[in-house]
Image (cartoon, rainbow, N blue to C red):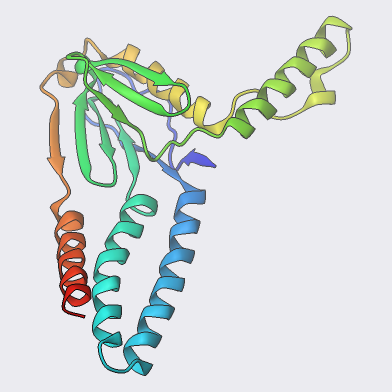
Length: 213
């Protein structure tokens, strides 16, 4: 489930600054913590109890796996304020002023498209087809209840999935702020070398250890 940590109303254009709305996948974070705990437990056990090359292999595997697991589970986040959308994906950080956001698309994944046509996936807002179908069923039951004169309480619950609602919020903010003076600028993309570097180092060391046998 993806929910914004902070969802203030769309701020007034006269305000120079606003607090970021932060969107993250709580399920992804929980899964990442579990995977890191298992990886750490197995790796440390191999370091302490292993013999021969085993501790070195375990160390190389930890250097490789820990950054990757953290990158795909704990790291992804989407930050949005009056001026820009900042997308923190596993290996890149993309900053898009609202004036450069051409569209926010939802399909089997959520993505933002900039004015030049480049697409960036929103890893922090994963699509749940199950949640989307459940919301559609609630919406259909609500419509049926309204048409028969009954109250919609018979089908209480959100009629939009959490990820779709998050995308609706971002679209609303993009439309409201696209022409604002503070929302102008260029798209910037930065590679996450703090993730890539340790992972590559771990992979190289592991490959060397396996090659030398």
